[in-house]
Length: 276
Length: 364
Image 1 (cartoon, each protein chain N blue to C red):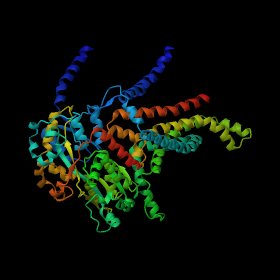
Image 2 (cartoon, each protein chain N blue to C red; image 1 turned 90 degrees about the horizontal axis):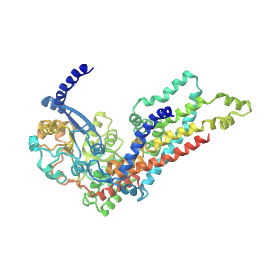
Image 3 (cartoon, rainbow over the protein chains, first blue to last red; image 1 turned 30 degrees about the horizontal axis):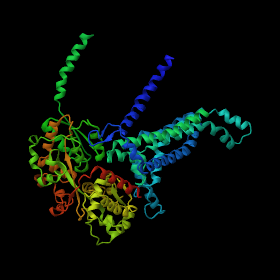
C-alpha cells in the first residue's frame, strides 16, 4: 500500500502543483473585484466576474465559435492523420524512423516561424497567388490570408503531429494476425477494416481527436495572425479582457468556463475507454 | 568539513559587495526604437551596464507591469492609455528633477499637453512622439479614387464610397480602440474624447459603414509589414510606423511607394514617455539614463535613426537632413495646432468602447 502511494506521489504532486493550484488561483481572481492598481484586482467574494459573462451572448458566442473551430480542426487532423499513421506503422522499420522524423521535423523550427511561413504563402503578393497568376489561372490576387480557411489550415498544420502519434502507437500495437484471421474467415479488406481495424483503433482515434481539440479550443496566436477579424474565438476574447480591458476577474471567470466546457469531452472519452 | 567550507563562505561574502557595485540598468522599450550607439555610449560614459529588452505592444508592457516586480528600471509607455493608467495606479515612481538637469531641454508646450494626464509632469519625460493617420500607397489610391483626390483627410478611409473602391487593394485598421475611436469621433465633428452612448453609437455607425471593405484589423506591427510589402494600400496606424514602412519599401525597391496622411480634421497626438516603475531596482541609474537621453546630441541621433520626432528642440539642427526636413516626421506648427490628445474615458465607458470594438471586428 505504502509502495503504491510512493509511486503515485509524483503524479499527485504534479496535479496539485500544475492543475489544482493554478485553477484555485484562477478561481480566486475570478471572485475578486477589478481595481486599477498592481495587480489590477482586489481579493473579495464578488460574483461580478461571472455575472458579466452572462449579461449577453458575447462570451457564449466566443466559446461556441472556439469549440466549432477546434472541432473542425480536430476532425480534419483525424482525417489526415489516420491513413498517415497507418502508413507509417506498416512501413519497414528503417523507413518508419525516417517517416516519423519527417513528421516531427517542423517542430524543430519555432511555432511563430511556421505561422510566418504560412503568411508568406497566403498573402496577396505571396507564393500561391504568385504561382496562380504566373500560370494565368487568375488575374487578380485571391484573398487567402485573414480568412477562416487560412486559420483552419494553419491550425491543422500546427496540431497534426499530436493526432498522428497516438494513432501510430495504436497501429504499431495492432496484432497483424487479427487482420489475417478476418481474411481467413472470408472478410474482404474493406469489411476487415470496418469490423476489425476501425473498432480496435477507435480509442486511439478519440485520443488523437482530444489531443488536438483541447489545445485548439484555447488557441490565440493562429486566429490572431491568420484568421479573419470576425473570428472572435475565446482565446482572443480572453486576451482582450486581460490586456485591453484589464478586467482580470472577467478574464479568469471566462478561463474557468472554458476549463469546465473542456471537461465534457474528456468525460465522454473516459466512458468510451471504459466500454472497450 | 566546516573548515573547508569556511574559506569558501568568506570568499562568497567578499564577492558580494563587488557584485552589488557592478551597476546594471534594465531598460524595457519598444522594438526598433533607439539608436543602438546611444546605449553603448551611455555605458562607456557612466560604467552602468544596460540590459536592453523590447516589447511590440503596449499590452505586453502593461501586462508585465500589472503583475508587479517586473525588474525593469526604465519603461516607455504611451501617454494614453498606458502611461495614464500606470500613473493612476501608482505604478510609477515620481522623478527627481534635481537628478535630471537636462529636463530643461524639454519643449514646455509639448510637456504641457502631457500634463493633462500626469499633473505637474511628475512621472515622465517625453521620449518620442507622433500622430495617428493613414499610410497609403499613393499611386493605388489615386488610381482608385481619381488623380485629383485630396490626400489629406480621413475621408479616404471613412467615406463608404471611397472604402468600397479601395477594398480590392487592401484596407487595414490597427487593432486599438484607444488609437482609432478618437480620430473617428473627430472626423464626425464630435469631441474626440466624447464617451457618451450617443458618441459611441455615431462612431460605431461610421466604422460599420466601411467594415465589409476592411481586409483586416490587426496589431500595428503587422500593419507596418503589410504596408512595406504592399499588402495594404490604406491603413490607419501610427505616423512613425508609416515612415518606417516607407523606408523599408524603398530599401526593397519593388516599386511600392508609401505616403503618410495626417488628417486635416485634426490628428491624434501621442507621446511615448520615459518613466521609472515604482519598484525599479535601480532608480538612480534610471534617472541618469533619462538625463543622458535628453541631451540634444543623443536625442538627435535617436530621431535620425528611428524617424520619430522628439521633444528636445535643441536637437533639431543636429538631426539628419532627410529626417529633419520631412514634414511627416516634424509636422508644421499649423498642423500641430489642429491636433488633439486622447483622454481617459470613465471605467464603464471603457467597457462600452471595447464592446463596440469587438462588434466592429466581428462585423455585426
